[in-house]
Length: 355
Image: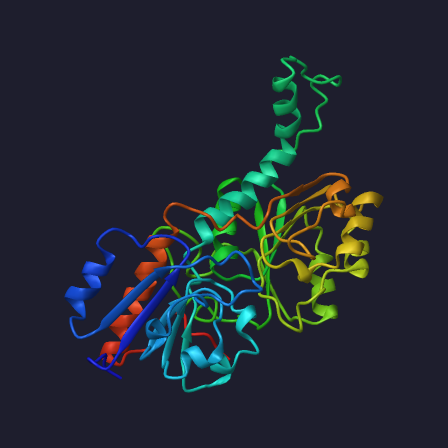
């Protein structure tokens, strides 16, 4: 349906929009009313935009935001552009359950920075960067007691297993491939043909694996049997980049860590904390079933002071920040602009969420 003078676009972002973006919207859609507000998304207990005057919400038919406001705020909305790649916070929302409202995510805007975080965490672990940072702070020049018989592991020939091969997993694969790793992947649905392996969503030009060419082996399935088969492939690194839902919640637990303990891989979680059973993860680290873990997400989140995961051996934890980048807002704006163009022309939308 074309965009008309009856439409109003409300944009709630946690940071300023790219320079000239509002001017671009005004030139392309002079009939469209646009209202932009900077709104914090830090406290999940507070619905975004709650302190805004009612007139800001009046007449809103198109919305671009991160977290869900109260459903009555979106009673006239026909299109929602999320600023996030995930939509788990929307699953029970009345507007999301209304199939007449088009929902699109911004999958594809985060892979460059998240993939750099994932590979950076691996290199930090494998080359003992944190150890040498602490030595430098103490002004100590210590190479280690074992000389050339080093425990440093380079990446050439290692096998990385990626669970979830969307845009983030594909960019991780691209960087891992450049380091000389072999890539195994697992997706919920089978991808038996070249066409089925392609990614049909927003991709930052020159990144990722849009045609699905990097994996040496491609597994499928989401139940425990399928997960266990994949994890039993002598993996040196395991990357979790899959969405969280009823099938993936705690799909990595004690049974899976026992399987991984045969090879003792390095675990990277850039997906969602509850995908991993936290007590089982702590036990796996303490028992040496993993060589280490890098976590940008945890369960619970935020991870409270005094939680035993902080003290688990060989774990690197950051407070869900791997998505951050100075280029993020521009990429989100690019997706939004493309979808407004498609909406106006009646074309299929980009990154449509399948509900």
